[in-house]
Length: 180
Image (cartoon, rainbow, N blue to C red; front, side, top):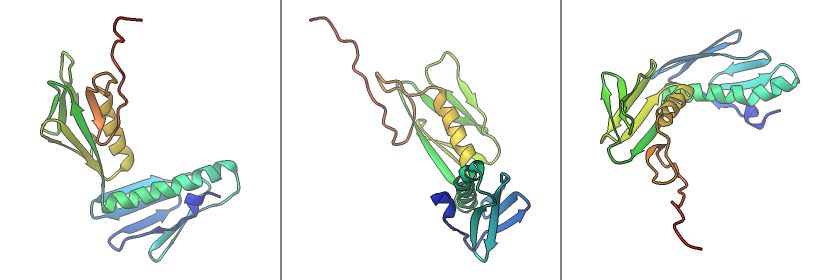
């Protein structure tokens, strides 16, 4: 059995959960999320706790045990607190701005890059170089942040590009010059 899957999930008081068949729906102050769990995964919802169990000892069920528990935990965290990812833009002339709800990036191409966020995802820009992606679904927030970063990932020579806040970019020395 999975060590992570054995952990019990505590429900905050301001959330409501519903489980019908294989679909769990979590509603909280920030919104509603639902997910269909794979076959072989069962939930036991007691007073203010959720425990995830497997119905069989198959290899697939044990692989999905910890994953399902983590997905449910992320749903509960998302509808109660939300998730954010912060990105930084580094480079001379690189900047970003918000137009309606779309993110406009000027990152060294001959054209601007326009990124439209999906529903329930909010993008904020501070000082033209700091981007904050926030929402209730951790998977979607991470995917949108990854899409923004992939437009101009940081390069190893000068460090120019879009990076996650706190990300370390390993730098390379330039040309080796004449000699030897």
